[in-house]
Every structure is written in C-alpha cells, then in structure tokens.
Image 1 (cartoon, rainbow, N blue to C red):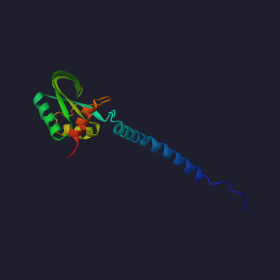
Image 2 (tube, rainbow, N blue to C red):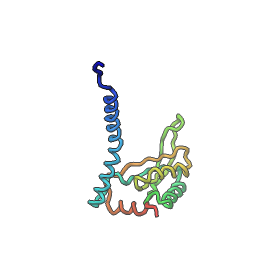
Image 3 (cartoon, helix red, strand yellow):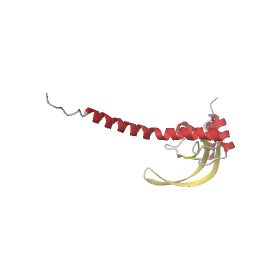
Image 4 (cartoon, rainbow, N blue to C red):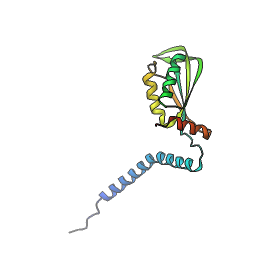
Amino acid sequence: MGCQAPSQNWLRSGWMTAVLVMVGSSLLYPILWSIFWQVYGIITGSYISGSHSVAFINCPNEQIAREIARGILEKKLAASVNIMPKSSSLYIWKGEIEESSEVLLVVKTRTAKLHELSGYVRFVHPFEAPDFMSVPIDRENLEYSKYIDKVTARN
C-alpha cells in the first residue's frame, strides 16, 4: 500500500459552498437592508425612503383619465390621483413619429402596490402599450405617508 493523495472532492465542495454563500448573501442583501430600514422607521417614527412611489400614466383624454383614476381609487391601489391638463406628446410608434394630446395621471401609492397598479392599468387602458412609469419617493411628510398606508391597506 503506498501513500495516496488526499481526495480533491473536499476542495471542490468547499469551493462550491463558498460560491453559494456569496451568491446567496448578494441576493439576500437587498431584502435584509429593506427589513432593517423598515424596522428603523417603525422604531424612530421616520419616513422610510422608497416605501412610497409616484406613478405617471398618460391617457388619451380627460374622460378616460377620470375613469382610470376612479378605478384606481375604488380598488385602493393608491391614495390620491392628480389629473394634469392636456399636454402635447411626441413619440415614435411603430417606426413613425406621432403627435397627440394626452392627459397625465400622477398617482401616489405604496411601492408594494406598483405591480398590482400596473396590471390594472394595462387591463383597463385603451392604449396597446400604456405609458406607465414610477419613481420612489425619497422624502415625504410622515403624516402623508401614514395617510397613503391607511387608504391603500386591504380591509
């Protein structure tokens, strides 16, 4: 019996474990960071940056804008919707430059509601590809953020 070299399996499994730990931690980091800031906000009573968002939705006219806004509020997908007056819009659609007038909805909601809000807008909007964009709110009046949370909570 001669001397045998140690098995290389331990080296491979150790390497794989290290890679899995690194990938797992990088995937969990945003979740853990978000939980930290939520707990911090609860303890200190301060606004948590990004927990609310503003969504912008273009509509072809005021009547459709009002119908979509009412539906959003009835479904408690947002606490408030502003209907901005007509504006000119230039865009490229199917390779051509188009020009139209549109009405803008400014929707204040919880960031957690954006997916559901976007789905509702796609379902009811007359455009083939509705213009739906959102931005997280960095700073907000704490009382207003509580208002948004209260209105958009499911009962």
